[in-house]
Image (tube, rainbow, N blue to C red; front, side, top):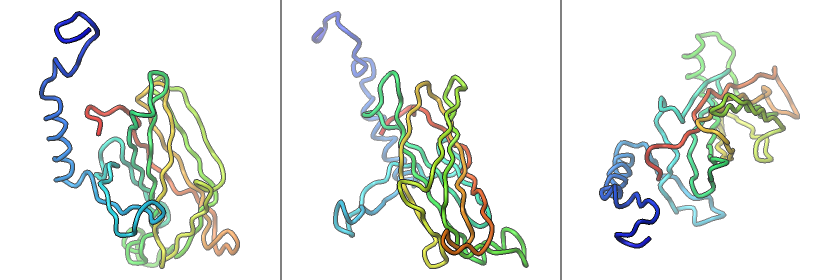
Length: 208
């Protein structure tokens, strides 16, 4: 019904300061660095264009994780997408970052004389997704988004985004990425699984 009527619920009436609280939380996230600034891909806009990145940046919050295996750090961040979600399926975007540590960083982590990874290429991916009922979905396949990123000391970082759905949140997601030392065409060492530590897929208290 209209104003004063007996129709359905109207949360904006019971929470008149909702917009103000949302704006305060948004500005707080900008101020403390939780939301960063990222450049647009050149295919979407000019190389100088930038935008606010809503993927969280703080390690230690439930929807962010980080783990390092043989010199490769895998960082994961999840973001709830309300416009793609409904009561049957909650939709999440996640951002994965691979970063090959420098020689100095690897020696500091593993000790002097340790074997240093100077280049490695992604072969396959594996995901283990658990929903709020404890039901498990496993996903595996070659590469990520059709690519097999090759990390080197000259180009040590690769970032991609993908998505997943969870029928009964909160969900949790973890997995690993199989790399080979050197490259797929010219391997110079062993294959190994770079861990992606578990991160949370849930509906936040405030949606941006």
